[in-house]
Amino acid sequence: MRSLKFKLSRNHLQVIYISFIRPILEYVDTVWDNIPTYLKDKLESIQIEAARIATGATKLCSKTKLYNDTGWVSLSERRSRHKIIKFHEMFHDQAPDYLCSLVPQQLYQVYNYNTRRAFNVQNMNCRTSFYQNSFLPSVIRKWNSLPQDVRCNPSKITLKNYSNRALRKSLHNIILVVEKAKYFTPDSG
Picture 1 (cartoon, one colour):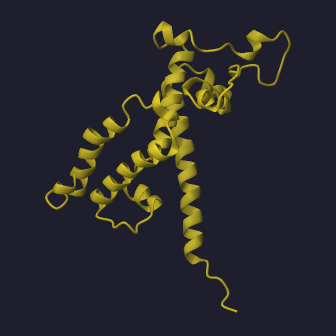
Picture 2: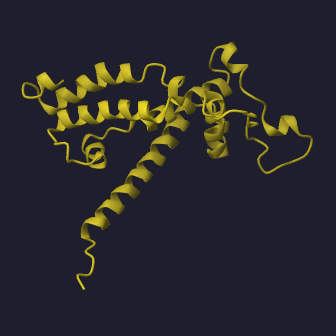
């Protein structure tokens, strides 16, 4: 992309990144999401560098401004969304049988009494932090934090709409904090 920086427009550079580079970074990302943090940061730096090339920004430009300017989402957020969507398919029997059989039972199927979290999926017991951060245990924690109407709806569109609304809301809150910080001037006394 760097060699095409001065030859192509910004939109063309973004299309090149989204079409050719990002799919390589996201290949089977639901499986390898529990890699060490330094490797996740290296992957994220590739996306940040692509955003800098596409926008013409310098290294001094913040990640938040780059993401707001390009409209992209961080790779970690995309991995999280992909994991939830894959688990949604598994939960609602829209995935192959060998994946659907991995989903633990809901709490109302396990216990004979009513609980407030009857429709939550039973958390998995994990002896190691490596296993706790692997696909199934980590996505079950995220899945149980979703509203019940989103979890129970077999439509992926409902899940994606909820995810997009939540993402827009969090981005809006970040922008408000940044805007307030711009106008904050400490007392010079």
